[in-house]
Image (cartoon, rainbow, N blue to C red; front, side, top):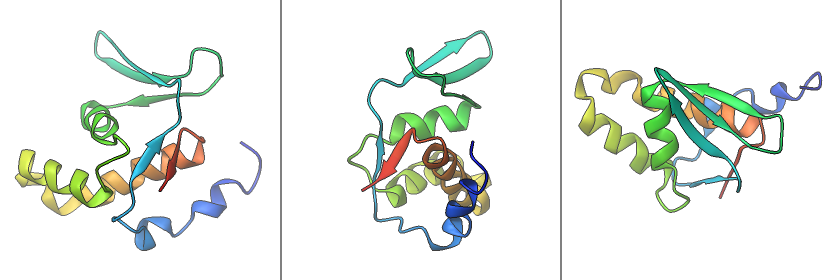
Amino acid sequence: MPSGKKGIWRGLKETMDTKKTVILEPGYLLERIDNEITVYHPTLTTSLYLNETGALIWELCDGVRPISEVIDILIKLYPENQERIADDVKALVIRLLERSIAVLN
Protein backbone atom coordinates (compact mmCIF):
# COMPACT_ATOMS: atom_id res chain seq x y z
CA MET A 1 0.00 0.00 0.00
CA PRO A 2 1.44 3.36 -0.92
CA SER A 3 2.62 5.54 1.90
CA GLY A 4 -0.14 7.72 3.28
CA LYS A 5 -3.06 5.78 1.78
CA LYS A 6 -4.13 4.50 5.20
CA GLY A 7 -4.09 8.07 6.44
CA ILE A 8 -7.10 9.03 4.35
CA TRP A 9 -9.25 6.69 6.45
CA ARG A 10 -7.90 7.93 9.80
CA GLY A 11 -10.72 9.18 11.98
CA LEU A 12 -13.42 7.50 9.87
CA LYS A 13 -14.38 5.12 12.68
CA GLU A 14 -15.54 8.06 14.79
CA THR A 15 -17.29 9.91 11.95
CA MET A 16 -18.64 7.05 9.81
CA ASP A 17 -22.23 7.59 8.68
CA THR A 18 -23.87 4.31 9.69
CA LYS A 19 -26.85 5.09 7.45
CA LYS A 20 -24.61 4.30 4.48
CA THR A 21 -24.41 0.86 2.92
CA VAL A 22 -21.26 -1.09 2.14
CA ILE A 23 -21.02 -2.03 -1.53
CA LEU A 24 -18.61 -4.92 -2.04
CA GLU A 25 -16.62 -4.74 -5.24
CA PRO A 26 -17.57 -7.47 -7.74
CA GLY A 27 -15.48 -10.58 -8.09
CA TYR A 28 -14.47 -11.03 -4.45
CA LEU A 29 -15.13 -14.42 -2.92
CA LEU A 30 -15.33 -15.62 0.67
CA GLU A 31 -13.80 -19.04 1.17
CA ARG A 32 -13.70 -21.17 4.30
CA ILE A 33 -10.93 -23.75 4.50
CA ASP A 34 -10.60 -25.61 7.78
CA ASN A 35 -10.61 -22.86 10.42
CA GLU A 36 -9.48 -20.05 8.13
CA ILE A 37 -11.73 -17.61 6.32
CA THR A 38 -10.32 -15.66 3.39
CA VAL A 39 -11.82 -12.99 1.17
CA TYR A 40 -9.96 -12.86 -2.13
CA HIS A 41 -10.23 -11.88 -5.76
CA PRO A 42 -9.24 -14.68 -8.14
CA THR A 43 -7.42 -12.40 -10.61
CA LEU A 44 -6.16 -9.63 -8.31
CA THR A 45 -3.60 -9.96 -5.55
CA THR A 46 -5.97 -8.68 -2.89
CA SER A 47 -6.92 -10.92 0.00
CA LEU A 48 -8.08 -10.48 3.56
CA TYR A 49 -8.26 -12.96 6.42
CA LEU A 50 -11.38 -12.82 8.60
CA ASN A 51 -12.57 -14.37 11.82
CA GLU A 52 -16.12 -15.78 12.13
CA THR A 53 -17.57 -12.40 13.10
CA GLY A 54 -15.78 -10.73 10.20
CA ALA A 55 -17.22 -13.32 7.81
CA LEU A 56 -20.71 -12.65 9.18
CA ILE A 57 -20.21 -8.90 8.73
CA TRP A 58 -19.07 -9.59 5.14
CA GLU A 59 -22.21 -11.61 4.47
CA LEU A 60 -24.45 -8.94 6.02
CA CYS A 61 -22.91 -6.19 3.87
CA ASP A 62 -25.22 -6.90 0.95
CA GLY A 63 -25.36 -3.38 -0.48
CA VAL A 64 -28.90 -2.97 0.86
CA ARG A 65 -28.54 -3.01 4.64
CA PRO A 66 -27.11 0.14 6.18
CA ILE A 67 -24.15 -0.26 8.51
CA SER A 68 -26.46 0.54 11.45
CA GLU A 69 -28.61 -2.50 10.62
CA VAL A 70 -25.55 -4.75 10.42
CA ILE A 71 -24.58 -3.50 13.89
CA ASP A 72 -28.12 -4.10 15.23
CA ILE A 73 -28.22 -7.66 13.88
CA LEU A 74 -24.88 -8.47 15.51
CA ILE A 75 -25.96 -6.95 18.84
CA LYS A 76 -29.01 -9.24 18.80
CA LEU A 77 -26.81 -12.25 18.03
CA TYR A 78 -24.06 -11.35 20.52
CA PRO A 79 -25.61 -9.19 23.28
CA GLU A 80 -22.68 -9.93 25.59
CA ASN A 81 -20.39 -8.05 23.17
CA GLN A 82 -22.69 -5.13 22.35
CA GLU A 83 -20.25 -2.52 23.69
CA ARG A 84 -17.63 -3.29 21.05
CA ILE A 85 -19.70 -4.47 18.08
CA ALA A 86 -20.09 -1.04 16.46
CA ASP A 87 -16.33 -0.45 16.64
CA ASP A 88 -15.62 -3.93 15.23
CA VAL A 89 -18.00 -3.43 12.30
CA LYS A 90 -16.57 0.01 11.53
CA ALA A 91 -13.00 -1.33 11.78
CA LEU A 92 -13.73 -4.05 9.23
CA VAL A 93 -15.47 -1.59 6.91
CA ILE A 94 -12.37 0.62 7.07
CA ARG A 95 -10.15 -2.39 6.23
CA LEU A 96 -12.36 -3.14 3.22
CA LEU A 97 -12.18 0.49 2.09
CA GLU A 98 -8.39 0.64 2.57
CA ARG A 99 -7.94 -2.38 0.31
CA SER A 100 -10.45 -1.15 -2.29
CA ILE A 101 -12.63 -4.20 -1.64
CA ALA A 102 -15.68 -2.05 -0.88
CA VAL A 103 -17.09 1.45 -1.17
CA LEU A 104 -19.67 3.31 0.91
CA ASN A 105 -22.93 4.39 -0.67
